[in-house]
Length: 162
Image 1 (cartoon, rainbow, N blue to C red):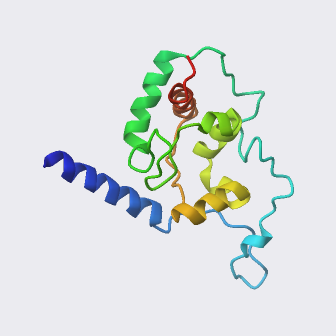
Image 2: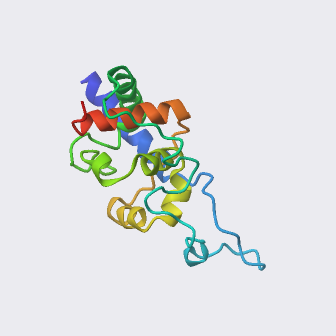
Protein backbone atom coordinates (compact mmCIF):
# COMPACT_ATOMS: atom_id res chain seq x y z
CA UNK A 1 0.00 0.00 0.00
CA UNK A 2 2.87 2.35 0.86
CA UNK A 3 4.45 1.78 -2.57
CA UNK A 4 1.19 2.63 -4.33
CA UNK A 5 0.83 5.83 -2.29
CA UNK A 6 4.41 6.87 -3.10
CA UNK A 7 3.94 6.05 -6.79
CA UNK A 8 0.66 7.99 -7.02
CA UNK A 9 2.24 10.93 -5.19
CA UNK A 10 5.17 10.94 -7.63
CA UNK A 11 2.81 10.93 -10.63
CA UNK A 12 0.70 13.73 -9.15
CA UNK A 13 3.79 15.81 -8.37
CA UNK A 14 5.25 15.33 -11.85
CA UNK A 15 1.96 16.32 -13.46
CA UNK A 16 1.74 19.35 -11.22
CA UNK A 17 5.27 20.40 -12.18
CA UNK A 18 4.72 19.65 -15.89
CA UNK A 19 1.41 21.49 -16.04
CA UNK A 20 2.47 24.48 -13.95
CA UNK A 21 3.12 27.82 -15.65
CA UNK A 22 6.81 28.09 -15.01
CA UNK A 23 9.40 30.11 -16.83
CA UNK A 24 8.74 29.15 -20.46
CA UNK A 25 10.89 31.09 -22.89
CA UNK A 26 8.81 33.02 -25.39
CA UNK A 27 9.64 34.62 -28.70
CA UNK A 28 10.08 38.37 -28.80
CA UNK A 29 6.74 40.03 -28.15
CA UNK A 30 5.34 42.62 -30.53
CA UNK A 31 5.81 46.30 -29.61
CA UNK A 32 2.31 46.39 -28.08
CA UNK A 33 3.57 44.19 -25.22
CA UNK A 34 1.46 41.19 -26.23
CA UNK A 35 2.92 37.71 -26.38
CA UNK A 36 4.26 36.72 -29.80
CA UNK A 37 2.27 33.98 -31.53
CA UNK A 38 3.99 30.61 -32.11
CA UNK A 39 4.26 31.42 -35.80
CA UNK A 40 6.73 34.21 -34.94
CA UNK A 41 9.26 31.79 -33.38
CA UNK A 42 12.26 31.70 -35.72
CA UNK A 43 12.74 28.13 -36.92
CA UNK A 44 14.59 28.89 -40.14
CA UNK A 45 17.98 28.06 -38.61
CA UNK A 46 16.71 25.00 -36.72
CA UNK A 47 18.53 21.74 -37.51
CA UNK A 48 16.14 18.78 -36.95
CA UNK A 49 19.09 16.35 -36.76
CA UNK A 50 20.87 18.30 -34.00
CA UNK A 51 18.11 20.16 -32.24
CA UNK A 52 18.47 23.44 -30.36
CA UNK A 53 21.26 23.72 -27.82
CA UNK A 54 24.99 23.40 -27.37
CA UNK A 55 25.36 19.73 -28.32
CA UNK A 56 26.61 18.72 -31.77
CA UNK A 57 28.46 15.83 -33.38
CA UNK A 58 31.67 17.65 -32.43
CA UNK A 59 31.11 17.57 -28.67
CA UNK A 60 29.01 14.43 -28.07
CA UNK A 61 31.49 11.58 -28.03
CA UNK A 62 29.78 8.22 -28.35
CA UNK A 63 31.86 5.04 -28.28
CA UNK A 64 30.66 2.10 -30.34
CA UNK A 65 30.72 0.00 -27.17
CA UNK A 66 28.42 0.75 -24.24
CA UNK A 67 29.87 2.11 -21.00
CA UNK A 68 28.07 -0.08 -18.41
CA UNK A 69 28.99 2.09 -15.42
CA UNK A 70 27.70 5.22 -17.15
CA UNK A 71 24.51 3.39 -18.18
CA UNK A 72 23.97 2.25 -14.56
CA UNK A 73 24.30 5.85 -13.39
CA UNK A 74 21.88 6.86 -16.13
CA UNK A 75 19.36 4.31 -14.86
CA UNK A 76 19.54 5.88 -11.39
CA UNK A 77 18.85 9.31 -12.91
CA UNK A 78 16.00 7.84 -14.96
CA UNK A 79 14.46 6.32 -11.83
CA UNK A 80 14.49 9.68 -10.04
CA UNK A 81 13.75 12.21 -12.80
CA UNK A 82 12.17 10.38 -15.74
CA UNK A 83 10.31 7.22 -14.67
CA UNK A 84 7.24 9.08 -13.43
CA UNK A 85 6.47 10.15 -17.03
CA UNK A 86 8.32 7.66 -19.28
CA UNK A 87 8.58 3.90 -19.62
CA UNK A 88 11.55 2.08 -21.13
CA UNK A 89 9.18 0.25 -23.49
CA UNK A 90 7.33 1.79 -26.43
CA UNK A 91 4.29 2.34 -24.20
CA UNK A 92 3.28 5.94 -23.47
CA UNK A 93 2.77 6.94 -19.84
CA UNK A 94 2.60 10.74 -19.57
CA UNK A 95 5.33 11.12 -22.16
CA UNK A 96 6.34 8.69 -24.90
CA UNK A 97 8.15 5.42 -24.19
CA UNK A 98 11.90 5.37 -24.67
CA UNK A 99 12.24 2.14 -26.66
CA UNK A 100 14.08 2.85 -29.91
CA UNK A 101 14.71 6.54 -29.22
CA UNK A 102 18.44 6.25 -30.00
CA UNK A 103 17.63 4.72 -33.38
CA UNK A 104 15.13 7.47 -34.24
CA UNK A 105 17.12 10.50 -33.05
CA UNK A 106 20.78 11.49 -33.12
CA UNK A 107 22.81 11.67 -29.90
CA UNK A 108 23.16 15.50 -30.14
CA UNK A 109 19.37 15.84 -30.64
CA UNK A 110 18.67 13.73 -27.54
CA UNK A 111 21.25 15.62 -25.45
CA UNK A 112 19.85 18.97 -26.60
CA UNK A 113 16.28 17.93 -25.89
CA UNK A 114 16.84 16.61 -22.38
CA UNK A 115 18.92 19.66 -21.41
CA UNK A 116 16.93 22.28 -23.34
CA UNK A 117 13.33 21.06 -23.74
CA UNK A 118 11.61 24.46 -23.88
CA UNK A 119 13.47 25.78 -26.94
CA UNK A 120 13.29 22.40 -28.64
CA UNK A 121 9.52 22.10 -28.19
CA UNK A 122 9.07 25.64 -29.51
CA UNK A 123 11.02 24.87 -32.70
CA UNK A 124 10.86 21.15 -33.50
CA UNK A 125 7.80 20.12 -35.56
CA UNK A 126 8.11 16.49 -34.43
CA UNK A 127 8.06 17.54 -30.77
CA UNK A 128 5.11 19.84 -31.38
CA UNK A 129 3.21 16.90 -32.88
CA UNK A 130 4.19 14.75 -29.88
CA UNK A 131 2.93 17.49 -27.56
CA UNK A 132 -0.48 17.32 -29.23
CA UNK A 133 -0.59 13.59 -28.44
CA UNK A 134 0.77 13.74 -24.87
CA UNK A 135 -0.77 17.13 -23.95
CA UNK A 136 2.01 17.84 -21.42
CA UNK A 137 5.23 19.77 -22.10
CA UNK A 138 8.32 18.02 -20.85
CA UNK A 139 9.58 20.03 -17.88
CA UNK A 140 13.18 21.15 -17.71
CA UNK A 141 14.75 18.77 -15.20
CA UNK A 142 17.89 20.94 -14.85
CA UNK A 143 20.15 18.06 -15.81
CA UNK A 144 23.88 18.61 -15.67
CA UNK A 145 25.88 17.84 -18.82
CA UNK A 146 27.21 14.72 -17.08
CA UNK A 147 23.68 13.60 -16.10
CA UNK A 148 22.47 14.07 -19.67
CA UNK A 149 25.33 11.98 -21.04
CA UNK A 150 24.64 9.20 -18.52
CA UNK A 151 20.95 9.20 -19.47
CA UNK A 152 21.91 8.91 -23.13
CA UNK A 153 24.07 5.90 -22.30
CA UNK A 154 21.15 4.32 -20.42
CA UNK A 155 18.93 4.96 -23.45
CA UNK A 156 21.50 3.24 -25.66
CA UNK A 157 21.58 0.27 -23.29
CA UNK A 158 17.78 0.17 -23.32
CA UNK A 159 17.94 0.01 -27.12
CA UNK A 160 20.28 -2.98 -27.07
CA UNK A 161 23.72 -1.41 -27.53
CA UNK A 162 26.36 -3.58 -25.85
